[in-house]
Image (cartoon, rainbow, N blue to C red):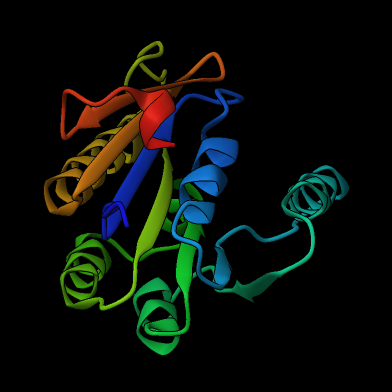
Length: 176
């Protein structure tokens, strides 16, 4: 049996196909699938986005909604199947700061069952026009770097196409 990454990070821009890629990466493990959702339906449009994601996954996924205590959700679900965390960007917007990211990284290193984490690539757009948005973008970039360091695999979705960043050298069509 082929060995897949224990900790896998999938990054990309908005509507890049990163969630669909992450779901494909989860399915290759052939284990029970647990979706850890960090989004909260604050308005009708977000509620529809969440519903669309649920429909696209189909039956067979266990959903755990946890917008804040992601480290705790990973600890509780470890050993129950492959976890897909979607997404770190929304989770980080609910966090208190660097201590939460450090805690997440510690817990990721302790996991026994595979984890696939979805995150946005925020640093490729224009520089935000206000200090708070720039600070969030910077913190998010540092979080992505910390998670990528831990990850066995890092993928980027670009225009619906998978690009494997870590480890290098494999054909994405063979690996997914």
